[in-house]
Length: 228
Image (tube, rainbow, N blue to C red):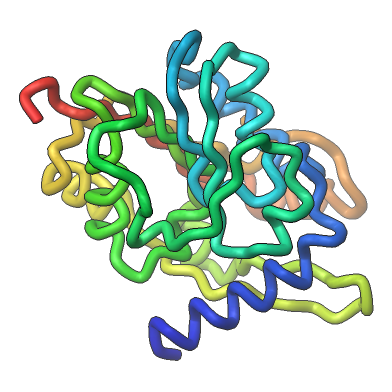
């Protein structure tokens, strides 16, 4: 599948998903992912923040609660944005951010970077809009989970299953992209099945037994060099 085709498939899927996609962590995996993100959450009091690939506004709400002064939510799906309660919503491409350089103190992105066709371009764009010393905090589905065949999918309101196109970037890819973007990786955390992810769900006992210890989510916090 070409880059353009993958983007269109994902856009259509997210537009379909928007009607049932709540602005809260709505399943055990997302709750575990959000806990890991909050453990690395930067000080945002008084900050200008970008909720990148915001969906219906899950992390925009967290930014507001933790004191960010100004929050801009950007997503490619107009349907997702329509269901967000964010005050400032921008439809845009995370590979070509429609913002001036250095205007954000914090960029947060949850479970979206795997949709980027070029990780270095994504990271460079996020770094470009960060002020010197600013923080990028993001999560993604772990490449180890992708390697054993786990996919990103959902069932829409018509009970049709959709699989999302996703690039399983490895940790080395993230580190190399951060170096190019003049970002210093400060923390790397994994959400592992049966360890950080333990919440029960239907038929979870067998799932946890089979995949115990497998990383399923990757969380990275990086800081922009003061010299940039």
